[in-house]
Length: 568
Image (tube, rainbow, N blue to C red; front, side):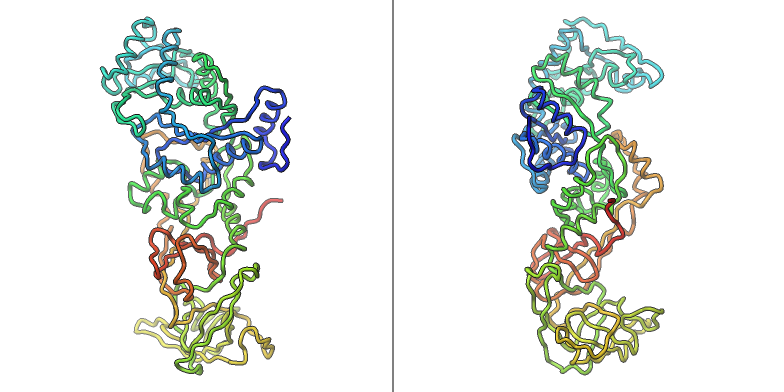
């Protein structure tokens, strides 16, 4: 019996299966695999599959392979292979072996020949449309192909000619011979090989026929000795064909497939085809755009692997699909960053303040803690002088009730500095306030224990002469909220190759806002992927793509607070 000292995953049905298999001796060592197709970048939904496969194997002392299911050269590329490897490592996982489905093409071809020899596969001359039309429906059986009863010898000869490149794309296919009246449509003689005169990223021009994913995948699992083939729920109907392939191809190893509910996050796309369309249509600036739900996009935005792992852990492993609130993911990001991130001040929409009674030309340096919840992060020195910047929203000429920030005659505290009182302001020709004039009280310096009077408002600021100009990128979800999103998630599967662009109407036109303001002087040395909490604004990450030395660009990771609470 396998004993786990510290469970890495909550109790779930897959863990129970693995425990039973080990205790019964059915399995000696747990071997799982994470098998992405290299036709795009990984997204947040893949994070759950990665976590399940790697963590369960680790928990039981097993191993996990990273396997690229590269059976469709028309859509696959080395760029995607490299990005997937980087994402898996960034999430904190390492694979036992790296494999490619294309490594097994010769073995798969031999197994297809075996099926033909057994009378379990045949070459079909029908077009893709004809095969689709004769497949039947959920209530009506399919129709046998007129080529279904070809002899073994003729099928072998045609299959060999297919490999030799003697036919055009789509001219012939190899189909499994099962049951055209099966209630499971996936068993109605599915196509297992098609012709594609396309160079492959791994095998070059060696092949012009390629196995279909549903045929290749069980063979790959068997060849690698996978014990538990874990996949999302949309593959449940494919399991009978998975088992058929293993049995009829006479594989020595017999893996078993188990399905779990996929991760669906509200207002978040998890369709590679739609994500690719966003890239192709230049709606985003690449697969790593911080608005994208790709792992690389989340990384660039500033999400941490620890937060993502905590998030998928909390969602658990079950058979249900469901829809997860985006705020739940953001909650774990805040929880992870709050003790790690230095706290500093940034003004995103600057308004100049002149402190008229402060000595001209004088600059004093004030002490400020880097993180009040984590004293070990120490403190820093920030400059203060006659001219500072505050947020435009922190001043109103005619404020409503219970507005406690600056307005004519009101006094506020500058964080880590002094009390200031607004006396006057200047407007431009359009009536916009461009500068406000204040006085400060030198007796109210922060940290001196001043108790003479209290003020209700505390605002942040940045000293003008030492400030560092910065760009701030604020984000909202790419997709507008929808009333029926939960229902759609229940039926969420990858679309057909013909993607309608109508979904582009769902794109949020306000998904990005770019502002230009100022940060404290030490931020000039900020490096790409450095993370900070900007007082009152939220958590920000230094963008690795657009930031330059001394010219930082900050991505909003998450805002400061949320009403979201984890269920008890």
